[in-house]
Length: 442
Ligand SMILES: [Zn+2]
Image (cartoon, rainbow, N blue to C red; front, side):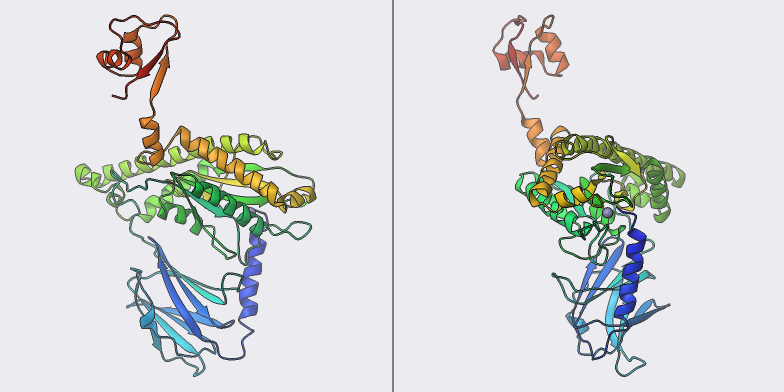
C-alpha cells in the first residue's frame, strides 16, 4: 500500500498514451491466450512491438471490436484455446484502414471491458490485455453444505504492486514492487517445502495486477489465507518499522451488501439448502447470515494471525504499529479468506531501505511470516486438511492433578470410562497425582 497509488495509476495511463504514439512499422500478433475465472476473462495478446489500439462495443448480439493499428492480419483465431463462457468466438473483420487489423470478439452476454498495454519486462514482451468482466457472474458458492477442499492448506501470497506500478520508491531508488516480490518468493519456497501447506502467488514476475483481481484470485483458489506484502512510505524520512493490516468492519459490511446485490438469486448462494427453505425472503435472510458469519470468521482469523505476525516480526524489525490496524483495502475483501496486509517497513526511511536491499534481512522477514503462518494453522487447521488429520490422530495424554478421579477425566475428554481404563490398563478408579494417562480417541 502506498500514498502513490493514484500517482502510479496516472503514470500507467501516461505510459499507455505514449505507447500509442510510438508505432511506425507494422506489428504482428504472435499469440492470444484466454484465461477465464468465475466472473471475468482475461485475454492476453502478444504483439511484436508497441501497438496502438482503439475499440468499441456493439449490442444484440454483444460484440467487442478492437482495431490494432498498423498490424498485419496473419493471426489465426482458430488456434486460440477459448474456455471462457463469456466468449462465443473470436474472428477477423474488415478494418476501416487497410493497414489495421480488426478483431471481433463475439460475446455470450454484455460485459464491461478494460483494455490496456503492458510494457515488456524480463518475463515477457509487448502485450495488450483485454479484461472482460461479467456484471452478473454465477455464484462462486455452488454448494454451501459441502465445499470442495484441498488436502493442503492454501496460502495465497500477494506481492504488492508490479509492472507499470512500482509502488513506493526509496530515497536510493529502490522499488517497492521488487522488494515485495523477493520476500514473497522466499515465503513461497518455505511454504511449499512444508508438507500440508501450499503457496500460490498472485504474481510471479514483474507485471501489473489490479488490486481487485487479487482477492478474486484468493476466492478462486479456495485459499485459507491471503498475505499481501508491501513496504510503506512517507513524505518524511523518519517513520520506520512494520505494521499489519486487516479489513475494517465498515468495508466488510459494504462488501457484504455488494455481494448480495450482485447475486440475482440468493438461492444460488445457498445451493441445495435453498430447496429446503423455499421462500425468497427467508432465503435472503439466510444468505445474509451465512455471509455475515463467514465474513466475521474471516475477520476474526485475520486479526488472530495479525497478532502472531506482529509477535514474530518484532524479533526482526521495530514495529511501527504494535497492534493490528484496520482499513478499507480492496486487496483484503475476499469474503471467505482470512486476509492480511503486511508492511515490512518504510522504504522511505534510508536505513530501512538499506535493510530491505539486504537479502539476509528479507529472508529474516520471510522467516517471521512463515513461522507465524505455521503457528496459526497448527493451532487451527481448516477441516479436511492434512494438518487437521494430523491433529486428530495425535495421541492425547493427561497428567492427573490433585482432586481428579478417573470418571472426572473421562467426562472431561468425552470418552467412555471403560475405554479409558482399558487404554491405561487400570482396573478400579484409583489414579495417582502426576500419573500420565493415555486418552483414547473414541
Ligand atoms: Zn504498497
